[in-house]
Amino acid sequence: MFLLLVLIPLILVLLLNINLYKAGQKTAVFAAGLFSLFQMFFVFSPKFLSTSFADMLSLKFECDGISWIMLFTISIISFASICVLYASETLSSRKKFNFANLILLSMAGMNGLVFVRDIFSIYVFIEIIAATSYVLIALDKTKKSLEASFKYLVLSSVATVMMLSAIAVLFMAAGSTEFVKVAEMYKQYGTNPLIIAATIFFIAGLFIKGGVMPFHGWLPDAYGAAPNPTSVFLAGIVTKTTGIYTLIRLYAIFDFSYSVQMVFLVFGALSVIVGAFGAINQNNFKRMLAYSSISQVGYIVLAFGSGTIMGVFAGMLHLFNHSVFKALLFVNASAIDSELKTNEIDKMAGLSSQMPVTSTTSIIAFLSTAGIPPLAGFWSKLLIIIALWFSGNREFAVVAILASVLTITYFLIMQKKVFFGKLKEKFYTIKEAPFAIRFASLFLCAITVLTGLFFPLILNFMGFLFSF
Amino acid sequence: MENLYIHIFLLFLVVITSVFAVSHFRIIRGAILLGGVSFFVSIILFMLKAPMAAMFELSVCAGLITVIFISVISITNPPYIDQRKQNRISMWKKIVALLSIILVCGVCIYIIDEKNIAFIPVMKNASAAAMTTKDSIWNMRHVDLIGQALILLTGIFAVVVLFKKGKDEK
Image (cartoon, rainbow over all chains, first blue to last red; front, side):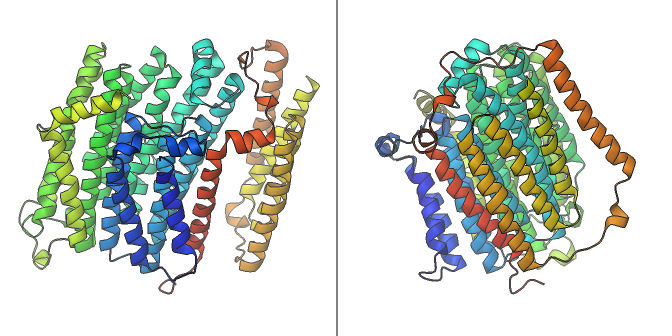
């Protein structure tokens, strides 16, 4: 059953590209959109947890609560990104066709990554996602996008070398790359200096992939220079899956010692603060959101640093919330870009009267990012702070609270400059973004609001998911 | 222990050839040097008693891929721009780089010889070497084969997107 979510996109790509009939960009975009919708509903199906099909092919795919949340998040963000792609006027039909194919391949890679329980298979699927991301960033073939893609390629290659070296050491020690065997080996030799070094290499590689401070250099360029649908996809799910999800998955098997937890806490706190200060100084809307993303990822890393089950739970919840509200903000940036043809904050003003949907959803997204009740971001941040406080890391809990004030600051500055104030004369003719973008905005906004309002129900459901 | 020195020497050659491959101005020579890297890697794999992996490395990476690279370069005939005068790396920088690599190799040999460091611990039932190629590819790693298919398709799209000119592109 799980295999379907990897095989269907693969088959779709093959069907779209064999010359039996000439598949146009609309067919490709609809195919990608339909698959993401299928995945969104498929994960709720009672049969989903049946492993009979996977067993038949003796594939070692497994699904648990964390995998379920990731699959749902992947489908939501991919769908939003495809909506933005559909409405995009700057991308040619050929590019839209290629984008739809690449997004299908990336989804297959992410779904595979979520199901595997083997550190080498994790590496293989991370590389699929990374390779599709290089192309997606460079899709426009402008100087900036090529430069951003190249920067990501170089840093990602460094991460790859680190992760492969670590896998080699762990494989030599455990005799296998399966999670169970590696976990056994950790119990026996977890304190060996070479094993610790391999663990740190692996974590550093994942930090690069996830854009955690101080390995975040590629992220603002990539998010800023990529085409709008790519930005939504990258910021919403790609970095979260390759970097942060893998970190959560390995957290259970690596059996981290206190010193490794301290690394998480320090780098998490650095990301939270530096990302927030970086966002305040930005004049480019997408770059500002990129720095905000670094800051929010820091919260997730901080949560893991608490070293408690509650921390992992809170980190996972914040990963979901952050994916949704950050994708929403990038969809709104796309809406503004599609109408104003710019991302420079200084050139915008008073857009709320002309773009009410974009303005309102943007306010909701930033309030959620800042952790204002009763929105989704409030609950996950509250749980992170509680996890830090009760694990004895009170100073980091204080950092997390103070950084929320910084988050409010930079979002208020952005909101004031972009949406409030007097509308510039040249923007009198500006109208709301195309329907597909507005739909994506409202869809993501509804998830943010509903997750916050019905949090007790979500909490129960997550408890059920984490029980298997 | 003698084998170890040969390994370190071969690794030194791999690093040097890789550096030359990525820093060469003529792309065709870069492709040939990459083939050289694969050749040295395959020798290391032979010495590490992984003949199948060595054969794959030699035939696919050193052979097939180098041929594909050279064919594509010959077909597309990329313009050669002589930037050597602008970007010439001074001799002393090259010497420093070479000396640092030799130093690292020397330190590695010293540590292995003198310090007698405890290498990676190996679990009692860790029997990876006993696995046959059939086992490792078809029974153990078939999930990765799906991954390989996905990477292949992604590679094709990367070439199409980045190198094929659209009607609207200059």
